[in-house]
Length: 427
Image 1 (tube, rainbow, N blue to C red):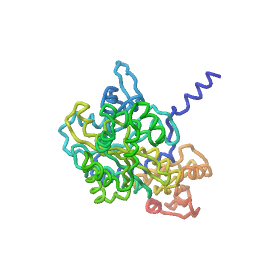
Image 2 (image 1 turned 180 degrees about the vertical axis):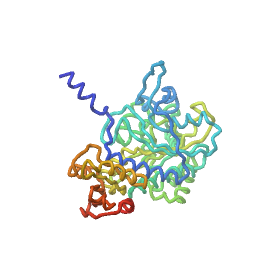
Image 3 (image 1 turned 90 degrees about the vertical axis):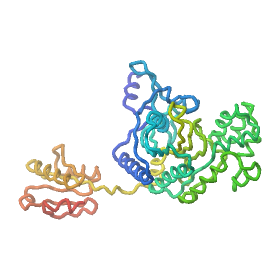
Image 4 (image 1 turned 120 degrees about the vertical axis):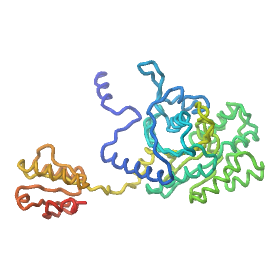
């Protein structure tokens, strides 16, 4: 029985991963294409990095933080080198910039690809998942932060989302306020880590964690509970503290770019990665406000990785969650791509069918023909199964008249079409 269990597991996708069959993969590709077009409108250019990196890079002190470091898939290759699968697309991008200091600045790039985290799989959360990132390196302007968020919001709009919320905070501001609330500089990272768990363990859980760490909860609670005109309340109570002006500038540009309607200042937002230095964002979608991504400014990361001191900012979304919600809400439209199947009435015309099929491809039509030498009825069943919009029926009588029968699979209607007019008929 044990042996049977191993055989069964061998043919299953590894835990935390999934297979994408053609119908799913086509929907997935539609999402990727839509996101890519939105990013490119803002001047972001594509860049690709390896799936695995040096483990030392991925676990660099001052970069990821202990929580993510423990989730890295790491291994040794045959040469004894310790490597790890990338857990995000930002650290590899920062490595590239550290090694290519002469790239024109600001450097604006996007990347859409797989990342891996050894986490506990759950609904909408995988160990292998896709991220779509935009980043700008070499600009300290809050406009660069706002542009990254705007590009992401446009991608979500183009996908059909009406309900989008971007939670916004600034780690400089939060650190200043926490110091005023009595949190020691040496306790700051631990305080941030606990507050970052607010959505998972709630206020009571955060309170218990902070108390266990001997960090005062009362002052922190007063800060993270601030709502409404948050910036005005902060300025009234604390004055022009560090990070406040950055938030105001960001909001100014957000209004110019038309994304202010999506923003909500939330002083409980921290973001778990240690490399964030200023504004941080979390993106929520749908009426259930599903968290699908986030980001922020990371002005020190490239220097930490051995490169020049370059300011940088970026944001990403997890495409698995986006696609999952779109499927749940039936947001995918029928595919606009028209597939054509060229069927053969008998074995004598299979060569003619293949020739017609190839001609259609040259004319820009997505077309396939029978590869299993089936009867016409079975070919029609197959055409329906693959979602063909039209079936071109090739028979001896029709070929004598230099035409074929074209069946509209939706209406079931057929008509004779001259050989030189087929592409025009089905496009």
